[in-house]
Image (cartoon, rainbow, N blue to C red; front, side):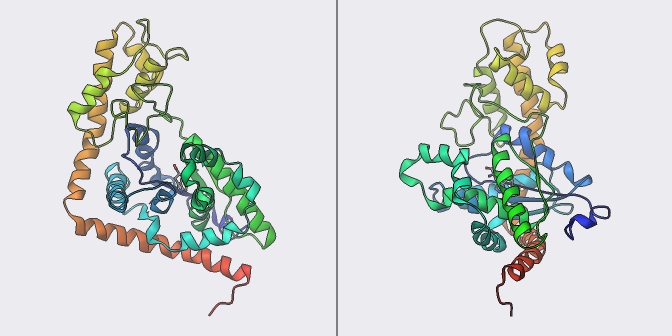
Length: 339
Ligand code: TRP
């Protein structure tokens, strides 16, 4: 047993998750992940990070990266992650991430990294920028997780493979030296885990979707949200039920249920005798109401850049304290000469 695992009866289990500051966060990000993050601190000891280092594996303008990063940091707090009860920070403020990543590179096999689905997909999407950072992306992610001895890693199902790789790396390192890293478990949230595009309900709702009508953004104005729901594609018949051959209606039911904190079954019952036009309007209104407090809190946070920077500083300090303890152990075990 590792030292950390030996303490589980006295400490809460630790959660780590992160989100990349690329594109504009969507209703899918909110209902699928961020909304639940704010509720985890009662049960878990939580760290949430803005993974800005991960954002540069795909070309991005500095100005855009900067604005996206600030926006996402403020949004994490706005969705309900209380910085007094959680550690909220920018990955780029804690140098240990890049340092541990380098070390873990040496315990990651080229073959296993090459098998990552996301790497293959992104390589195909941008064949002229298949950079080494893109290849190394999951190793940096492993460093994020392992630095904090995370037990639980809430992720979208597209990231489970990366958490699996992280476990392999941890196991290899622990086996080669001695128990150093806690063994993390990837966990996909069960409620509203996947929200699809309103215009193409077979595709995930994209953050940087050029197709603006398909994606509802967390910070969209109410009238824009309503307009998007009005145009949402439905299906060819008139029944409001969730089923595999009705992806449009199923998606809207999922959104409605998650936005109002109910189940898809209950939502289905509620709209049993309804029509599509009315149902879309109600789904839109439910979304507007779910997002309203988030947008208001966000706007308040963005009015004071100094206060926001102070929150970043305090989060980074707390994170760095934990990270440096893990990194120190790793440096010793590997055999680096310490001063
Ligand atoms: N790769 C994750 C995503 O695209 C973001 C991420 C970076 C992450 N580091 C992480 C998620 C560590 C969980 C744990 O969604």
